[in-house]
Image 1 (cartoon, rainbow, N blue to C red):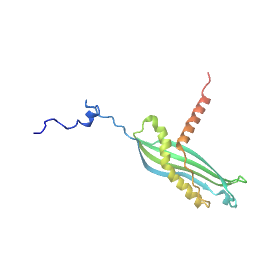
Image 2: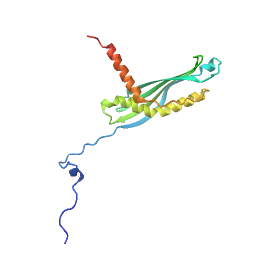
Image 3: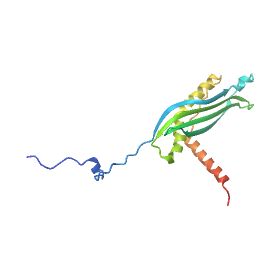
Image 4: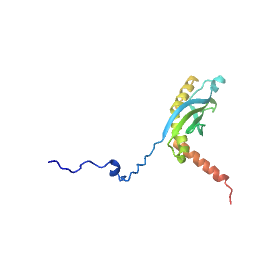
Length: 179
């Protein structure tokens, strides 16, 4: 004869100590969607060609990076841009060989990011998404401008963000009234 003992297991919620009907609190992961990306502004000057000189020797390349983010009219949408200023100079003479300025932007839909984490998310994660495309544009423009293609190194957006926060804190401390 079969045993009448119930051998089914309790529901998972009861096993997890949630037998009182409470729903498990589900952590929603941040979501990012790139809605569009584009060159907002770009300038490339082949200074060596304008002066009738050929670029000689190994150049010194200086790259300055700026980041910007702002809220768009729609809820949860943001404009994020990377601004690069690239200058190539001859090591020996210090003459400018070429200069490039580019403002590359993306439109992002962001969800499930707490307000206290939104600023770093916009200035770290969003630029990480844009950077490979910007890198390719710089490569192509320098090559098409008559120079060996410039392959930008990876940018550490976390360090860039931390340095900017530290710079702002120091500027605020210097501007604070002394009592």
